[in-house]
Length: 179
Image (tube, rainbow, N blue to C red; front, side):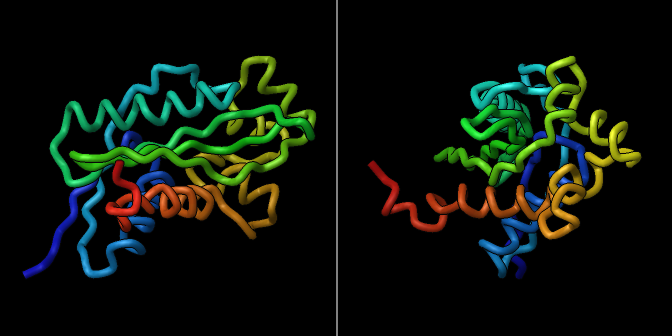
């Protein structure tokens, strides 16, 4: 008999669904991971401009999944912008939950060129700015700005996957994280 883990992901973006599935497969190698992406509202602007907005978007999407579906896990990923001391960066917040606990994590931060940041401040989404400035098409469903600006050494999916694995630590060691 097979051990099946069902997962609802708060996005139908194939990169996000794949990142969640691959992260969970790494943590639970003996399980069959069944991921389903669903439309889940973020409750934040399409292009989050602060860490707080980005984190809220991930949590809102995850809570929507948990409140409207039945699964073993609920996950969401929200990409956004932060302006750090050294300049603008893009990163993602991840939220993952089962029916007992929730964990939030954050990805590594990718420095952004000033021209890209200026496009974001003007109201465009990161993927649209990247597509326009670099001549790509639909970058957000592919390697993302991460892959483009790192020459493929890091991708949107690999970055999300790593953040999710880190966020899964409380699930791997629940007694260490209990109150």
